[in-house]
Image 1 (cartoon, one colour):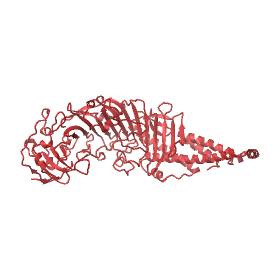
Image 2 (cartoon, helix red, strand yellow):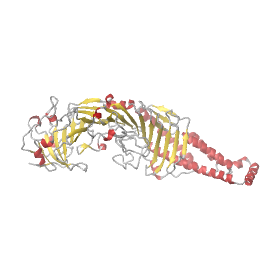
Image 3 (cartoon, one colour):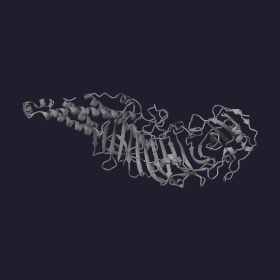
Image 4 (cartoon, one colour):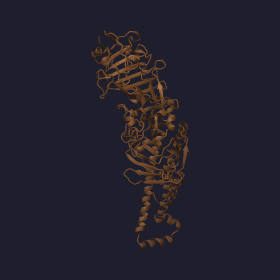
Length: 631
């Protein structure tokens, strides 16, 4: 007898439905490999051989009955003893995908005996064995584990099989006990924005070693998230990348992110931590309204044996192999803080990027990646750093020298936080709030003391910088990188002071020469976080400064040009007239004297503006006003 299931045939609990008990006798599968003593019957159902192979579904005693099912139908596998009414087989239509076959057999095993097999399975103590294409071969196994018996899931395994042989798996642990670790769609990893990168959480990948029958760390091992202020949304995200010691970045530049599915190789047994991405919310932006809000990240590249950090994690409720290897959640941040990086990248998200859809809603100005702030494979290649990621309005800084500590400093020149020891940096400006390409800033440490001392400003279409600032006094202060202190310093001091000084300078220039702010930038100065608005204001101020300065420069240079082109006799006449005139009349005439005074004031303005000295810059503008002849 065949029965139709409800329309919801996925991992979500289905409505109560009648099931027919097939008239087949229960047969316990043959023992495969070496079972650990005392394994319960439900573990024996999915027992693996040492090489990772699993008994094909086509050899199960219920297989012929399963083949008669149509999509949406299922049956309870008859059994006696503890297994009675605790296994369900159904045929499902997979949801909205072209990458997988249209249908699958799903064998559901009720591990805790709560009757869930009769209601379609639950998400806390059931195992789902999946056969894509209904060909009798196991392709996936999704196992929900309730460690403490409280009726919600504490851990989740998503195991990937290749040709019926275990290959690799995602493991998740619900640190904050909100009953969420991963989003599972069609019995494999689904949309992470619907998962749990929002509070305290950890998930990680291990590779199955078919020689020893054990797990080894590989790829993203782990992702760890931290809610530091108790609002259920993460302020810190760490991704640790594992790859074989001595892997070639030339032949496998993104090994940790792309090679976990390949066949087992002996080198995989000795894994190294080859990259750590360490992301932070510094402006208190992470919240229910704006989740996944990370402002900056450290990208650490090196190679340290995983065994120095990782720990064996045994769960007796996990299907064998029961021991995985991962850096414990409580240790991941300390690992990132002390990691010996051969080189370090620093990324700061200054504003949005209209050219890339990072997240769940590309129309949202807070269109963040769920896993933090990425490095980008441009200008400075850093292996195993992943992507895709934001290009525009993302400040990048790079340090080539090894370091085992993370140090930051504040620059009074550009009023920004930087990576100590970074030798160079850049930010491409534009493509936010509907704007086009605007320009670029390049920064350099030319004397090797760890602080930036040279800034080059480029506008779109210009191969030469429109402004160069080189300083002898970097006005740099090393700052405490403790997140709580850093957040207070940045949000309560740095940003408000920067905004106030920009407003003062823009008002001083605007009082002498009005500036029409582009519509997109005007919107950007009024929307988004205070940090976003500050960045838009900086861009406007730079454009206004370039307009202000270039306009006065053109006028002064025109007067000097006319003076150069005047005939000698006229020049001598001018000298006689000057001798006969009072000094005040000379000062009030557009001539080489006043033009030179203007250029001198503009030079002072340029120096003060480039050095971030608002007081001096406003004084230089006051001097320009006193000259009074040029607008």
